[in-house]
Length: 422
Figure (cartoon, rainbow, N blue to C red):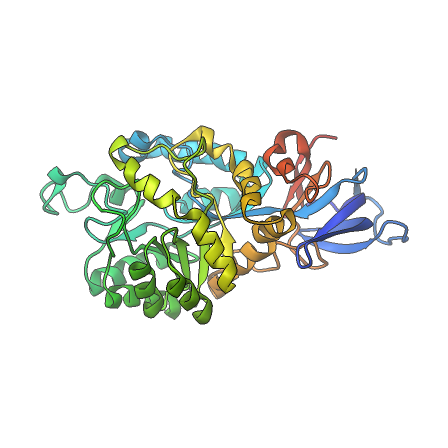
């Protein structure tokens, strides 16, 4: 049953295309769409019986979008994520999904993990949560960033064909073109809106140095071919120029992280139209918990963040924003703080546009595999009705997004009000 019409009165609408906030306005939502956006003084027909939300001069922004989120692993401690009961992880993920929505994030792109069941539960209204664009299992080579087996689990098959992480749907260990093709097709069969491959070394994983390049170009191309045959795309985890350049040659459409890139590689990404999904990783109080032996890799990676943002701006690379929170419930709760932190590199208007319209444009790369067709990231007639009423002006004070419990008076997803402070 569609939700009742909702009329937002006396609001100022953030235009994510221009990065500006307009004058007093009213916004009518009917069903799951924005029906009308009009000046506050105009007589608006068709509002009889509508629920009225008094904006009190607050700012109405599109629902926020996190382009790199792990629905299952964001709040799960590392030991539980790697060895814990799968049922516990999924229940914890449902709570994480609810909390994510209550922070004003109405959409996430899940960058790897067994999120299909959670997505189904959210879409069916069984649990509250954001729209989820699932990648399915992270596809990794042996010894790659997604291979969390111990040395004692080798050779493969010694303790059974699949490890715990594979059986849970978290990762897919695939070596060679045929295995990569099979793994890619399995995720697409399960409902992946895009694919995620590990193309280079990582910080949290223990077996791969940060500088290594993972997979060969033909292996990456196999996943790209599988995705393109389904009308969608591949994103890859990679930090270094070698890893990213190989991925670009293979046809990958989005690079995750990339803190160690150089001028030549950034220029190549801009020239080929490849997206850069970059996270504000710093060695600060918001750094993810990692094993002590991996801290040198963390320091190497975070030292490149300022340079990476400068290169993206210099070359005009299509830039998305995400958090990539892992293994820490306290850090997961700082999703809005991670967005506000972007003032180190961007203006508040640029930040809000990136976390709404720009991220929505990235999600649209999934084409016919898009599970939520319709405009996202904008407050416009015909757009999907994901809206947040902010008590204040986020362009004057971007830290409002870091205080959603008090600053976000109303949160709407899919035309239904899920939070209303009155």
